[in-house]
Length: 514
Image (cartoon, rainbow, N blue to C red; front, side, top):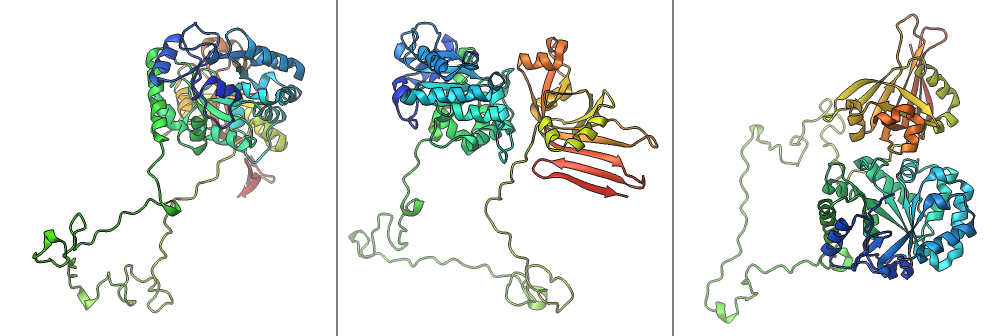
């Protein structure tokens, strides 16, 4: 993986310093972009090997590399030898990066072997950093936080947390940045899963996909988890030239400027209030007895005049709160009713309570929990090759399109021709709704719907397995996280219909309509 990483402190601190210490910038970019960042920061930076020799990055500021796929399937002793060789190789200065951790290459036993190797390294485990692949980041980020992770994911999270730091990639396999919703959701859910007292979580920010680095950083800064990971070590990826490197550097500097300590606050967390000046004294606090003001006539303090209220018909002012006849709102109910003169209770001020996150699940997870409902839904979805897909246009209006659905490897997949409008919709906003085709009565017996969020997949191996020969044509492939599955069927006797709806965290609810 060609990766550009930027953090913040020296390599020796990275290898032997405490986990909470800040690290300096690590550059895994072309030489020109790395030089722009190094010279712009004016401080020490780190460089991922292999790289061109340059006096800016001596051996003490170079990081070795070990391929993650080479560690998968090995036992703890072999992993330990590979890591030690990585940070001792020629040109490395005592730190090794595992590039990268892909869940599909690991088993629970292999993840436990990695954890045992890091545990056996002791203090030297702080010489190891991990790059979490886009698939690793997305699978943990889209998992329901109320449920335990699958065995492989749970074991990998526990293993990589024993290293110095783990960098979460904020882009997909095709180098496109994550949408705003996923950019906020993934770091938050990773932080909730991260074991306390272990290594740090950090972020890698890559190509902006035309949105601009400012938009990319704003998405990350939108949540406390994202800001904390940026503070622990911001990272850069895919800066192909000096121009993109300067744009990344400007946002990095802006983030550091926002983190500067604010003005000192007084007791209780409040800023000290300025002493109020006596209106009878001068700007320097000189009173009437001051020699400079001796003999002057002292002006009494000004009193604010109240504007007289206009007369109202009936002699009652509706702004007067005294009595039942002078209320802000007309009385409710018949005259004399109890409480008719009372005003509506004021709405409590303050920030609105945050809504709980909507849970989603893979299609295979839904099938494991509700096999009967999913089997009936598959019967209607598989009855027709072309289904109806609803996406969201730029201005929020719905767009209906025909589509084909693939259900394989425990996931629901959507395919699309390159550059289609529905593909543009899903790349911008992944929310979708899917409806099976229906037939006219009296042949109609039922149909099915599914809705959720789709995310584009750029991994060439996954695309080849799912799309087959169409993977070479540039077609889009989207993985669907399901939020709701519904089956509408004709009842028995056929004088009513039944609606069975599944939602994450609630289960199946049946409603009958006659």
